[in-house]
Length: 248
Image (tube, rainbow, N blue to C red; front, side, top):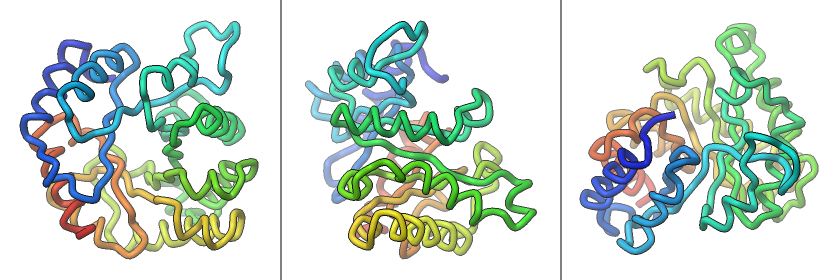
């Protein structure tokens, strides 16, 4: 919940001035402003050719109806939104979103031709209790259970350990690799080896310019879900460049 539409306008223009296509290389980059900023950001990145895709932080599980305060995935698709974050830890823990609701939102995003970024992750208590794998398996199995394998292959899964978000305590590369490798195994068991190979699995949790390249060089880490660092254009471009180096 950062930036009004004028602040978002300045932020994305700053990003556009700093970010060159060569910086991006083979990396897909998306920005996810608040709902009230989406149209403003779209009106900048498209005509000015800024090499980023437009994303949303959330959406409703239904396409239309009497759901006061919700934003339909149909509305987002018509604003050329390409990626939608679903099940972010803050949505789960602050707003009580269940695995079932996350699953329904995933289906809504896919139904409307957008790519979901499905967040999964364990709390500090679950980690200390040795429940990381159980928690991740439960979230992933629920998320992909009703989706066809081809849709699973095209989605993004973001592993965001709740204990690392906004705390400055990023996972070690070894911990991130172990968790994401496990997520890929769970996807393979549920949707098949091809889907497990093609699905993109990101790491999210206190990603910054200093740790991004090391994290992204892990064998199973396909990208980063960037939080606070994305609010600073220079820092965000540094992370994008790190991702391009790690990929190249």
